[in-house]
Structure formats: C-alpha cells, structure tokens
Image 1 (cartoon, rainbow, N blue to C red):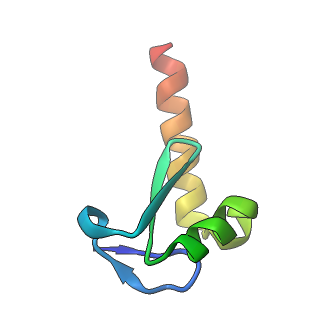
Image 2: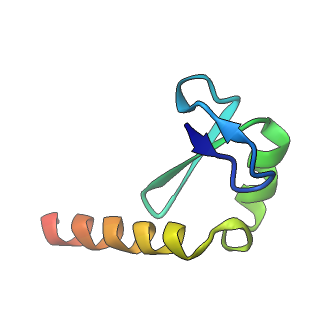
Length: 65
C-alpha cells in the first residue's frame, strides 16, 4: 500500500485512481482531484523521505547516463 501525499489516504498502487511521477518517484492518488493538486505544487505535499528518494533516484539516473 502507498499513501496519497495530498489527503494521506492509503492507496493500492495497482488500483489507484491516478498516478504522477516527480523526479523519478511514482506517487499514487485516491482521486484525480488529489493528483491535480499534487501536480500543481508537488513540493508542498512531499515530505523529507519523498525528497530523499527523488534525489537518490535522480543521482542513480545520472550515474547510468
């Protein structure tokens, strides 16, 4: 299970209503409305763990390239 970063509802990635990617990290949403809010201001909804994951994945992509 994942956590919708906007409303904090538990979301099953396999059946999530919507998905966005930010700096290589996938985020899953309970609704299109939550996805749209996230897409407008992703940093508002990301916690320190999300930011660290995004930076690590970006660093890995840069090493491969």
